[in-house]
Image (cartoon, rainbow, N blue to C red):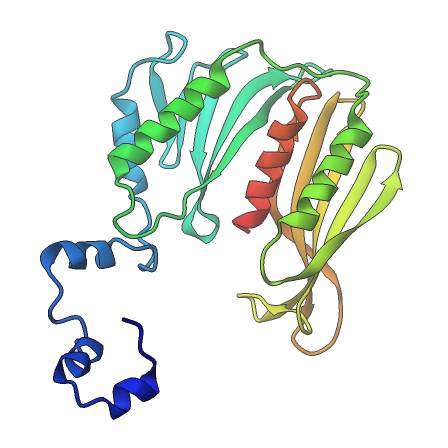
Length: 271
């Protein structure tokens, strides 16, 4: 039966005293496991090399065996339509899947297909299970027709509107309220966030004044480019200096809008 603190404090029933003053020592093994397995545990980052080792042993994709190019990158194939899995460092822990195409100028570009945050909570998932998940995502990204560049993009304004709507609903907690949007020209939009208080302290002992997402439809290349970056000032004073990009990805007009927006939002949320 429910009792409040006052009832407990004035009660002479020793059973009630023991119930409130248990401190967890009488928990059974199964009870402890349920407590231990909750979602309030410390972050336990994945062992990337163990994940990659598991992926390297998995079946070929489109007849291509996996090839580890760098310590953080695996590639399947080297022709158009090849797919690549990249895992970023812990500062922005995520996996990015890209596919190789050419732009209107004949240049090779890796377009972004999926971005997946890799913040793993303690004992929630092991490296083998995560390797299997990532492998399935790469397989999904490799299916279907290869995306292509185009000189016109009829859904350009729709993409901008959907991205802006999504950023108004989902953004990091240190950003101040919803973002604003500014049209730089017909093919270039800027979505920008203010920071709470007087700016967020950056690791470089500077202050983050603002975070910008730039979205550009490059008509000459026939592709969409999106990049996000801080605008910083010294701790004392205001300089508003543009910083290196946190991400810089290319997308094709033939990609579904939801796929593009989801990748950009996931980049934003691990920033």
